[in-house]
Length: 378
Image (cartoon, rainbow, N blue to C red; front, side, top):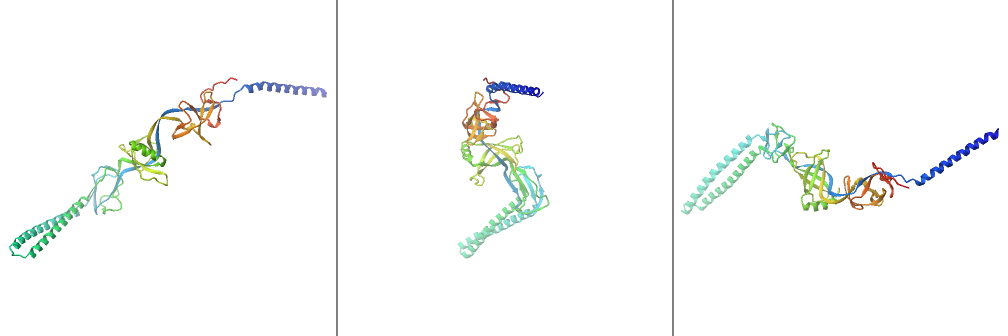
């Protein structure tokens, strides 16, 4: 009975070993004839095309000019001739002050001038009579000289009267306050009926000239030589786009470069002037500024995502005709957003890997995502 039980176990074990050996023998030829799996990647072309040399910075919109309107005389404000927030033109009447005291002062100055003019005329006639009497020996020269002195004093008085009259006229003109520039008015700080004082600290209103308008920004010091060189060849174009994401693009030109670099930031202040006829730019607004220095007509360009950085510098994975990759060191000229201009390392017509770099080593076989990989034969 024991022998009968042992024999089936031996037979079963032997059968299992035979099956395992057969399975192993069949798998061995498949491992020897298979090729390594291709790594799926995305690729992009290396192209030659025109690329602008530009710098992107953040700028601030500034009024072309700003004037704080203040009264130059003290008096009661009798009228406001505009609504706050209105656009005004140069010379437009804005405020009126009480004219009556100034008109009275003008009449008094005019009367003083007329009185002293009459006295001066009479004194000149007296001098002429004294001249005749002195010539005939009837009057002493001393009397004639005294008369001349009176005439000279009255001439000085007349000059003072004329100055006082002109001052009274100017003071009367100050009773009407006009816009010194064309622009946009701000908040009205006083209303009719208030007493305003000459050169008060608080302005009556502030006017900003917004057409044209400035955009001020800090330009990187390393690009300053390029900025000055290209500006010497002609005006440099500037684009400004609101930081809020608005699609509107304003076009202007650089009109001011500061005379010193800010040592704390390594930048220099630059201003560009924009016509701003559509009033899309507003003082105090933040904008994204693009300064276009020049255009390189035949730049070698690759997608920025294709460029990787390693211990020895920048490189790309170049796709070879046999669908393997080569690690190719490159020299970067500059980066322009999603595109990178390459100075050396690749040529137009090459293909580079744009996604899947982490799974690659030099010589790796690849398959382009969305494209069937070519079959290999053993």
